[in-house]
Length: 104
Image 1: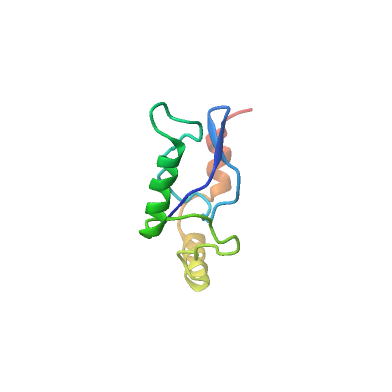
Image 2 (image 1 turned 90 degrees about the vertical axis):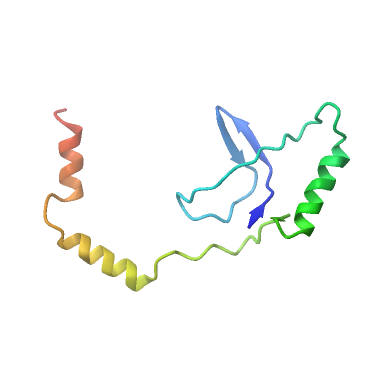
């Protein structure tokens, strides 16, 4: 499901003006619609297209503020994965980070 949110472009990055219902590091696709008038396109026409997309169920006008997408793993699955990773042979993550940093 898509949703429409306003964002500001600052320092080479888009910053949403309201919270997004996304999990950390979740991949998204962005379709940029400029808020400023487009030459030859009345703003009413752009709003009309957006309203049609919302009516067709292809976009949501406003995200539900309290709804957070479910975690793709259950608590039991996360624990099992953590246990398996903890038993994996080889170096610990901290050892690899220290090794990767090299000499100070």
